[in-house]
Image (cartoon, one colour):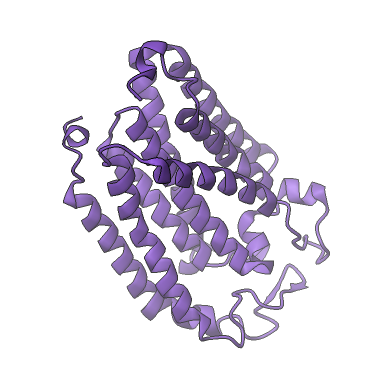
Length: 301
């Protein structure tokens, strides 16, 4: 708790995010540019499961968009330093931080839910029915038809979950270096996924580096962004029991249910939304209600 008491962000966090941003910029500039701009030019390369996508990357014929995207996405990565310094290590988070996090959580939750129902083709090359979306139409497969909305999905989810987690830590005078680091790595990992399109059933060869990066980014994002919340709830639940312990059990149970659904039903954007919506609801209740605050402590917050 010493770092919180001093209200001074350790330089290591800024160095971590500066290194992540630098590595990302190099990767996008020297390794991904040709893949994004030239890999999907022909109809054969844009035909997935029998469906011809008009523009998998969202940049066909508009290559000038690529450097703009690299710059903008790098800036959004650097903003995570601000989330840590101005929220977690703020002397007292002001109204701007509160409304920024609240609006971000609400908008993020609504967006990821709506995104999961966007049109996408099924295995027969036709627009998927609801049953198809429930079984196997993933967020990344939807991204083949809506590439810029997919990028926004990743950027928005990472920023809103992370900033609200920092607000939660600050509100309850809690800190975990492990939680902050894992949340940082998880948030950065989704940038790998949104820049490496998944090609559905045509893309299950994990010997292909792009495919491996896509799936690794998605799995790290899911696990490492949930970890800071789990760490917080476990710590508070062990000490204070009550509602924190109940929230810990329910949240972990929901993650377990999702894992079972992924194995039994299959992966889909709708199923993938279960832990994300649960995280948003949990963060909103922790950050913007007094449900978890004892009456004796309310005057201190």
